[in-house]
Amino acid sequence: MKVNYRNFLVHFLGIVLFLSVPVLISPDLIGVKKLFTIPPFLRDFFTYLLLLAFFYVNYYILIPKLYHSKKYIFYFAVVLGCYLIAEILPRVLIHDFHPVNHEMHLPHEAPPQMPPDMHGPPHHSPHQPHHPGPPPFFLKTLFWIDVSRHFFLFSGVLLLSLMLKINERLKQAHKEKINAELSYLKAQINPHFLFNTLNSIYSLAIQKSDETANAVVKLSGMMRYVLTESQNEFVSLQKELDYINNYIELQKTRLDSTIKLHYTITGTTTGKAIAPLILIPFIENAFKYGVNAEENSEITIEISVNEAAINLFVKNNKVSIRPDPENRSGLGIENTKSRLLLLYPGKHYLNIDDNSASFSVSLSIKS
Image 1 (tube, rainbow, N blue to C red):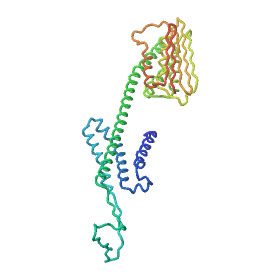
Image 2: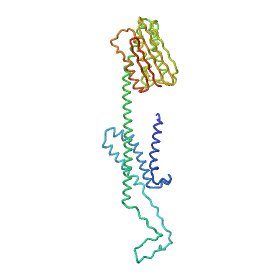
Image 3: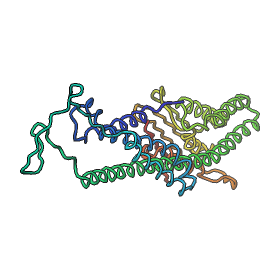
């Protein structure tokens, strides 16, 4: 299982900062070692530990099992129980302790007695000062301040875990939606490639060309790529270019010598990745609408790769083509636009120039 080190680091730092709060706000901050001998601090720190445990229990168990299952009453009952545990347990387990100093007396020796004052009320000796405890009202006030602060912290932990989990679920739903849309688009694109390529091989077979067998081998490699690699979100750029090379070589076998084809690839592909079948629709479109042996047919395909981007330029002269009522014009282009928006939001530039004489596409994908 792949470890997400970034998430691990975020959680670790969050835990450290959260557990630092009771230390930093303690009025008895005179040293960490001494702090852990003070009962009020120990109770407070233990409460923070329980709140931290509640965050992860709520995030990983209660929200998925109860909240997302719409068992709201049971969920909030469990949450209330967790709050009561976090509030009461530290008070039950950690008590205030007062060291008692006993004076040393000899056996059978009574402690010295002070003579009573016959002319006034009894008073305390200056050697035995009297320290009255804090009034009950003050203790109750401190208690309710503690309860209010812990309730506020518990509510914050509860809301934070809910917000994070709901946000995670929304992101997952959005990702599943995108995957479903991409699957639908690929299902439309793949048959489109297949039918056009088979038409090319059919033309070779009609001509009884010696290139027919070689074309079938190239088609086999292309279909293997479509069936295996297109299921991945991204593939090696070199594999995508190999697919394009096979496609162009297959098209060249049926092109007339009067048709001008300029095809160049520059740059290095090492370490580069790209969405599968994202470039080929623009190239296919050029062969589909720019080839007619009786007219000035010229196709330019330029692919350049640099550190910042993968660039594609395709241009074809417009020629007369035989209309095909079963062919939905522009299907590949429109689907590819949608895929670019889904896979490279804000990371691609696409410009299409469609005029009376030519059709050109300039695409740049940040790498």
